Image (tube, rainbow, N blue to C red; front, top):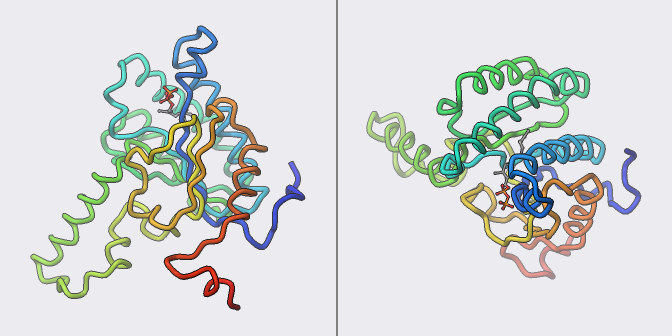
Length: 248
Ligand code: FPP
């Protein structure tokens, strides 16, 4: 893939976050078991990581497993965990050679031991890469993330390490799982639904949101390019007026 001509190279979103939805429906529409949708969805993940690198996105966050997804049938949960592990092992070399660094947000400790160990290994082996940050949201829930941050900030106040007056937006954000990462500029949800589903609620405050009908297993490089093209056509105002943001 080459840099797409239709995109403005001076206005590439630094951080793109994606809610990968529609795997189950994709499979069901074809009379296949739901996990087949996840399996083909892994090809979309590969395609999007490749495209993000070429386009020059710095951080790509994918919502791969939510804190609520444990409620799914055990067969589907197991299939997802298996796919993740295989994906990580298979992609490690490609990530290393493409200068991609893997990160993870979410409560990693509660993932099956094998997945956790594989994840830790890939994160460690790609830690020095300074190209695309490929950030997987795994066992992630935004409300739990916020509660975790509140607890840590409260603990620091109790021990006297922190004065409550010093709590600012920046300080609070430093206690979220995404600490050190910029907020998403563009948030895409595939699969035709228009909701955030407990994903990056704090961080997406000023994200441009793009809801697309394409089911995740059908989502490929060209769909990411199209979403970025839509993003480039929007005016981000951050609470200001249109005239104010147009001023140099
Ligand atoms: C939502 O579709 C998708 C998920 C819960 C899992 C996404 C996982 C993958 C694409 C594969 C593994 C990921 C990586 C990074 C290798 P859904 O099942 O809720 O779809 P539906 O709304 O049609 O039921």
